[in-house]
Structures are given as structure tokens and as C-alpha cells.
Amino acid sequence: MNRTVTVEHYKAAMLLSGVGDALGYRNQKWEYNESGPDIHKELEELGGLKNIKVELPDWPVSDDTVLHLATAEGLATGKKGEELLHEVAARYVEAMKDMEGRKPGPSSILGVSQLRPGEEEGFRVPYNPDATGCGAAMRSMCIGLRYPKPDQLLSLVAVAVETGRMTHPHPTGFLGAVASALFVAYAAQRRPVTTWGVGLLNEACPVARNFVQGRGFAVEETERDWSYFCDKWQWYLDLRGISNGVGPANWPESYGPAERDQSYKSFSLAGWAGRSGHDAPMIALDALLSAGANWEDLMSRAAFHGGDSDSTAVIACCCWGLLHGTRSVPLGNYERLEYRQRLERSGELLYALAH
Image (tube, rainbow, N blue to C red; front, side, top):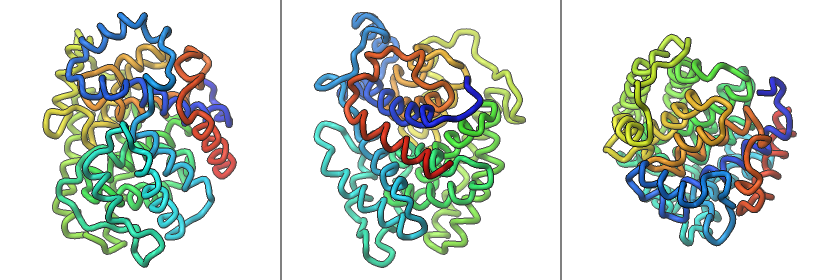
């Protein structure tokens, strides 16, 4: 891992997030396949990861990348405050026109339909007790590229909460956005991966709670539903033995595709691993903790499982790209990725703004 973060790392973070999405999605086939072992078998029949050429028509990106680009390109304008929120809201509205065959989630569809960018408070939507999904988490990594420094934590949290709440006003949903953005910022800071979960609980979540209370929007409902996200994350850190931020993590004796499917389900809210705001970043972190610098191992864990595989991979691969770049990634995995130019360009622009 190169200690210095360069523009190439930023480009790799954005590019590989799209690669993880396209691979985990496999044009709807793998996102909706509930068996990790079956996916690994199909992967083998394709000649393994190194032989996959990720390009249209077989390997489109999903809604995850389209909405991540909307966030990134909104941030890349350099706007701030409410002007930025209206900008991002407008881009989400526009992005929803590019969803043919990409399978956006119900909370994302509903939330964006309620946005009124340009009108007063038009970036807000009503509180939704069902908006616990991962739709905010899987489009927010780039917020960590825009605000990568420790002293920018409040800006990172504010933007993640407010853009997350545009579709996922429930804390299990929007705190997923905070987690994804935060993990990318931690990757930029080169913090040990074993400390990321503790940082989320002890540093970012209290800031997010204060921020929500200070904004005065849906405070009562948010408070009522707050604890699940933090409790489940504490459970996960205890499970891995890293609740003090010190590794190595504890792993089950056998942790292959079948065991991971079972384990990831135990992370989940309702049995669909990675489907929610808390467990999409959790599975991404699990993969990063275990895979180190190994691209194939990362993908095996983050993209090829029986849960919401594109949403977990898009987060894991963004962090991984920022840490390791593209050097050890097979060229075919990214050379002709849909929207490659836009992804790399937004990485360049965010690097310029952040540095």
C-alpha cells in the first residue's frame, strides 16, 4: 500500500467501485442469486475473475454506480451548504432516468420522487420508518473523497446525513451513508482497517446524532429508531474481537462461501445480507479486514455472496482502490467498464477539491 494518496488512488477508488458493482450485479443474475457457492461455481465456469471482461452488454453497472456518480459529480461542482444539497438532489432526480435494467430499490425510487430541488427545503423528504435499506450507503463513498481529513469529520457527516436522508430518512438507512463515507476517509488517512468500526461508533455516530438534533427535522422519529444501527455494529465488533480497534480480527475456523452466506445473514436486518444501511458497509469491512491487498479474495468476499452483492462490493472496492490502486487488478476487469470516463473524471475533480 502506497502511504501517499495520489490522484491515481482517487481515480482507482471511483473506477473500482463501479467494477465491484458490475461484477456483484452481473446484470441482475448475481444480485438476486441467494447462494454464494453457486455464484463461485458460475465464476469458475467463466474462467475465474481474471478472465472476466467487464463491459456492456453483459456487465452493466447497477443503480448503485449511477447514484454514486450523481453524488460524486454533485460534490465535484465545489458547491457547499444547502446549495450543494439542492445540486445533489437535482442529480438524483436526473439519475432516475437512467435506471433501465439497473434495479433501484423502493426507498430510492420513493425518496427521489418526493425531492423538489430548487424549492425551499426541497432536498427533504418525509420520515419513512421503512427506509432502512442500503441505497444511501452504496452511493456515499465519494463523500469521503471530498472530505478526507480528520478535521473535516463534521462536513463529511453533515453531507452524508443530508444526502442520505433524501431517500433514506431512517437512521439505519442514512447512517449507512455515514459509514461508507467515513471508511473511505479513513482509507485516505491510512488508518488501520481494524480501527474503522470503532471510529464509526465512537467518532462519527455521536457527531451525526448531534447534527440531526441541531437540524430539527424528524428528531423524535430519528431518536426513536436510532439504536439498532449502533447496537448491531457493536455486536459485529465484539464478534470479530476488534471493539478496542486492535487486530487481528477473529475469524471462524472455516469461512468459505457457504459459511460466509450464513455469517452475513446473521449481520442482516431481515435475512437479506447487505440489503440494509448497517450491513452493506459491515460486509464490505469484513471483506477488507480479511482480504488485505488481494483483489481476488476481496471480490470473493465482497461481491460473490448470496446477499445484496453489488451494494457490498461497491463500498468495499472504493475503499480498496483508494488503498491499493489498480495495479494488481486484471485489465479486463475495468478497461471497458460502463461510465469509466465519468468515474475517473469525478475522482480527479474530487482530488483537486480535497487537496
